[in-house]
Length: 78
Image (cartoon, rainbow, N blue to C red; front, side, top):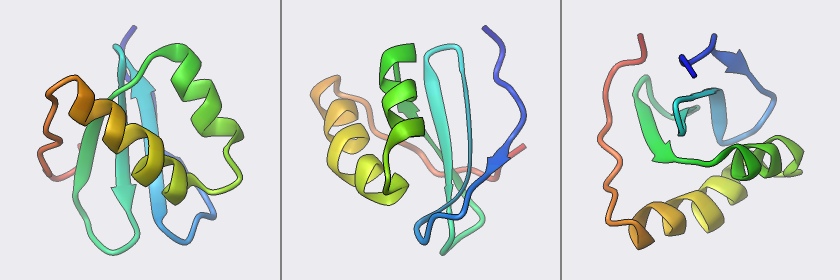
């Protein structure tokens, strides 16, 4: 599945996100860099329903990435 368009959100921590190919890309409000996290469709659906996107990224996605040995690398969003 190709990655889709960027979606902006009203989170105090997450500025924008997009999902595709098993990866959730996140841009935080404090910077202009995107971070990639491994993410299944089910996990992405949970992200969409999360009342706090920032808490979900910090509490779930970062831990999930670490468990898989994945280190998110910051890069400019395309």
